[in-house]
Length: 211
Image (cartoon, rainbow, N blue to C red; front, side):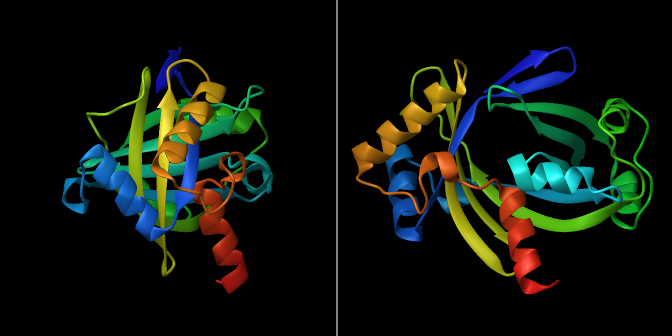
């Protein structure tokens, strides 16, 4: 769940990667199916100075453009001192996205200004695309929280994930997620606190593949 602070949105979330069979159990628990999922495509970018690559490897902070339906949003996601995520969103259009993917400059605005402040510099280069089919349950939800059930594909890889966003704290999100998995008898692929972010999974697989 997001809290807005000026242009920033604060996300307090916890995630768990699941085996396919456990993903189905989660879907059944919340009464959703693959047919309920909404497609969103994330396009990720790095910069020539290595600032964004260093942040990505360390904390999963990232620059991305997310396309949902006909809308595209440029998003800078940065981990804060609390371990939560501050997200800076900026609407853009499809033409700007395509220009960015071929090495074009970012549009002027909050995202470009903040990147300059942290030392990131043009040109930005395209890391890759990750498609997520996301279901958002509306029943059986934990108190003060939202649940997202994600099936993602990237570079020939597929994975399954559940995410809980709390309106209280990151620690609360982690507790809610662990309690849910315990209730359903599910053990995540890696411990919740060690779950790599989507962009880190894309980045790691690209490096291993030598793409």
